[in-house]
Figure 1 (cartoon, rainbow, N blue to C red):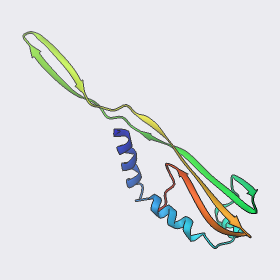
Figure 2: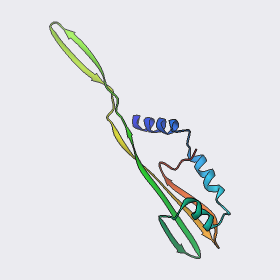
Figure 3: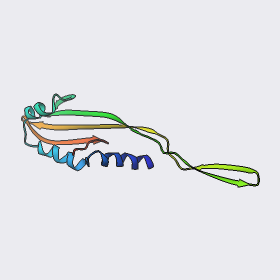
Figure 4: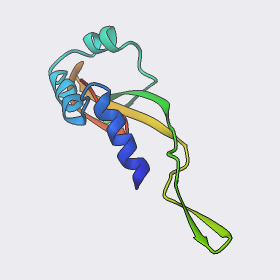
Length: 123
């Protein structure tokens, strides 16, 4: 659970990027043309047609390294013997980041969108 807190802290420190702001960006594309989206976002990683609708899929990914924290050590003496115990600390970890965004297009116009992942944020 501590790594989740560190991940959230790093997202906050990265300029207050939020999923709410990302959703506002996506919503601003509703009513725009497919051509305008491709001109702005570039070619999608995937596109498919079904039921008279077209779907454009954009994806991104990466990694975020979270350094570990050192434990606290406590030494207790009993006579001539010292006992040292460690408490706390966390191991370093690598967090996979991803964002997959899909735009639905009908008659050349963006009608809806959806996203999934742990890094769909905007500033």
